[in-house]
Image (cartoon, rainbow, N blue to C red):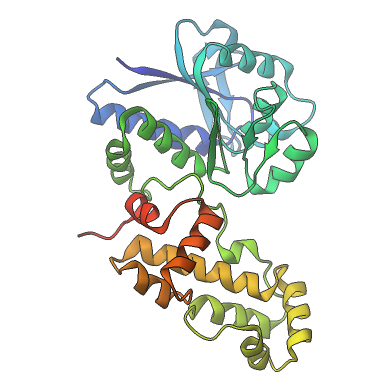
Length: 321
């Protein structure tokens, strides 16, 4: 029996927020030989809805005319989703359908529509990192966490921006049918294997500002390219030709992150890549990324991704055996 997924759209929605998850569900349905999912697109009024970028999409059903059971209500994002005032008819329709759905999910700034409908009150939620501060300020009852790719709390799922909707949909498929099917879907779509929700939206370079001064851009590249090197503040200060105190101040001003924290996160990213792409034992991964010991590697992974290195490798390993 197919699970019905109702996706809500509106003028100016983000096309990939719809097409990415829709392709995940369609591929799962194909692999399950028609026993997976059926995707219906709904809007306040049926007809042609134009996505951001000008691509027209047909919404066959009006929100208040959706009949029958709804397994998953998926609310997409877009600039209009975070606008204020929100479209009351859209928000009311989402609230009504959410009351009938087994679970509710949003992609990117679709979280604003869930929050406006009161569906995120008291819950931890995420959205595109650019919009996270606005979401938290506008809806103080929502516990906004800008870091994870997706979050599930008490039947309500929210995801980070745009392509994270694919990760969200893969997680929903895994919850329904197991991780093996999610892996097959990911392989079929030629996307990264199902990433754990706790994985950060950001790499180290994305977290840090691009240094304005060329010597610091070179130093940032050196840190990211040489995780096992001596990256202590004294060593980096010598490399920059500065005193330690002055170096620490200027590095933080240039990048927005203290040097010690940048180095730790850069090494964590290096460890993550080794776990994804090699079969190296955990102790070798710890050494090669400059973290030294498996215990340190474990603590870092729990801190940043809320998962152990071993679990991360099992869920995200991409090297062919």
